[in-house]
Image (tube, rainbow, N blue to C red; front, side):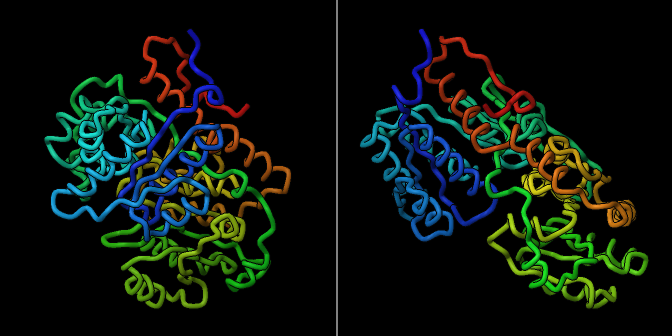
Length: 407
């Protein structure tokens, strides 16, 4: 018996997301829902109404179910989701944040419909509570890890007792049937993230044609952001040796006063600047010359690395957690030891002296990313997981992230 095709038997899928405030998890949730809908499936998103990505989801034409505020014990939230599951006869309930997993399980049980429950783990961290680590895998039908490193945490645990970051010292595993854990790399919008001319934005940012612009892209909240302070320390080492280098920090966060003070203290006022959060990230990636991603905390995958590669740009990134997996897809740039400012400075000096790729080479790099990390590729892999738990007796060929290509 063949698996039902998309057009003949559309699935009824609900994505549950109680945040939708922004960031990689919410972006992936909406993009996956949109990709599934384009394949002909019936897809809903349930989440708070007045959030940044709630509007994006509605603007994409996705049916949106506004959930009430979580409140005491999240009961109104759970009953609202249970009612939607029953009313729309949902087959797949997919949760994307750790805070939504137990509400999803309870809502599924209360609905009387008992949809299959899928959880995507977007973080390189253990689930917080002992109860969750012991029982969640048993209560779910499938877990999706966004990298092999994340899957390793879920299956085996990762322990670094000597780390000065408490979050890295002990990341214990889940208990239960580890065959439920699948690896699917996140996808990016390779239609938008592609090489194109962004000279106007460079001019707006005060960049001249001869300038070589390094940039860190991402939030910078306490305690250490995405390594922005380490980036500025490396800039202080090399800016006199590479006079045309410029250093941009694109994002937002509560480290802003510290970063502004670092720029003054290191004598970088004329060469480094904070660029406010910028919505048009494809243009931003095309305006810079090299992405620097010197993460010092935890990182499940690092989509920003793939976005830069898709625009034909080199990347200097920490060889930490899931970042090497993201880097190896494009493979252009350099991995460095995490939390090592000297190695970061040396790498930045090297790449400032490396000629930029020409138009053909940038397109070739883009195509490498598109073949493995487009939204279409990710959507098909997730759909295979849905099929495998709905029709477990039907043999299917499982696609791993390293094998996936577009058709």
